[in-house]
Amino acid sequence: YSLHRLKDKGIFSIKRDSINQAGSVNIIVFDKTGTLTHGSFTIQVVHPVGVKEEKFLEYIYAAESLSTHPIGKAICHGKNLKKVASEQKNFLEIPGVGVETNWKKNKILAGNSKLMSKFNIEIEEPKEIGTAIHCAVNGKYIGYIVLSDIIKEDAQPMVDLLHSEKVEIILLTGDHEENTKDICNKLKIDRWHSELLPEQKTDILVQEMENTDKAVAFIGDGINDAPSIIRSDIGIAMGGIGSDIAVENADIVIMNDDPAKVYDAMRIAKMARNTSIFNIAFALFIKIGVTIAAITLEIIGAEPLPMWVAVLADTGLTVVLVINSLILLYRKVRIKKI
Ligand code: ADP
Ligand code: MG
Image 1 (cartoon, protein in one colour):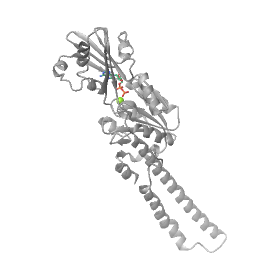
Image 2 (cartoon, rainbow, N blue to C red; image 1 turned 120 degrees about the vertical axis):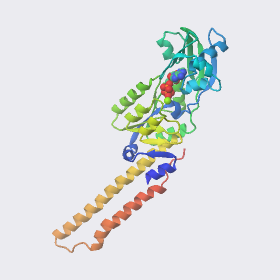
Image 3 (cartoon, rainbow, N blue to C red; image 1 turned 45 degrees about the horizontal axis):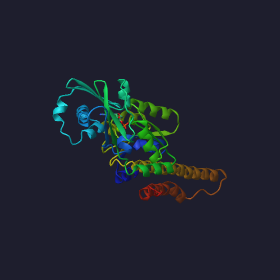
Image 4 (cartoon, rainbow, N blue to C red; image 1 turned 30 degrees about the horizontal axis):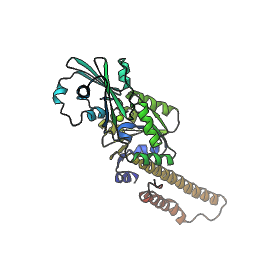
């Protein structure tokens, strides 16, 4: 019954075996980009250093022209870069840091401060809040671009709902500390780890799992998140933009990418779990009770229990328990209004 309800609610699927664990999750680890934010960036500031803005843009467009990352796509959005893209040599997309390419005998780097420090390039710290992408040509710093991503409308209700269920929320991201802190403070997220490489996200998740004996869920959009989705007790994938591998390995798939559905999934799993625990306990209680009563009456030589008691304790009990399960279909998932 729960499974049908999940589909109604736009949560595409929850694996049957995961209902038990999904109902007892105490920590949820989130990926930021694409999960809590839309993952569609817009350029806020272009800040060239020592070169004309045109020249700066020419280089950064060239560097990102082959990028498949949402940041690279946003930088190149609406530009016709087919020719420039075909001129790139040894293009390399380094997960979690940026891109490296050779164009017209120039070596271009575009990415975060981690990429720049790897090549010993001194950067200018942006004052603006957002995700900063720095650019360097032939080892010379030429400036930065600041992009901003929009927090999903349902991210705040989701945090509040999960907090009301005493679930701790942890955010993991490859983005830099300042921007992460800003988003986490806005949303009142409990803890966060920033500037992570994709594989470090999995390490942190594993650490969190070792530090608690409760179930830990991980939710991501799939790009680089598949290992964490597989490792966590409950892996959740954003099905709309998620990659196939993430969706295939997830215990729960959220079809409309609405983060608040995570709460609904947990609640439904919890309700289903509580109902099944109640049903088993109640059935055992009645059956053991009737058995003890029958044996006791036999021992003391009293009148035996009438036949209808046995029928009630068996078929009657089954009917009661089925009705109790059916009630699940009509119960409200969100009790608290946010
Ligand atoms: P998240 O953890 O937020 O999902 P990623 O791990 O995909 O982010 O990327 C982390 C960081 O790596 C980005 O914030 C950005 O600074 C840098 N980065 C990744 N790909 C690119 C790219 N194509 N161009 C510039 N920077 C990039
Ligand atoms: Mg991501």
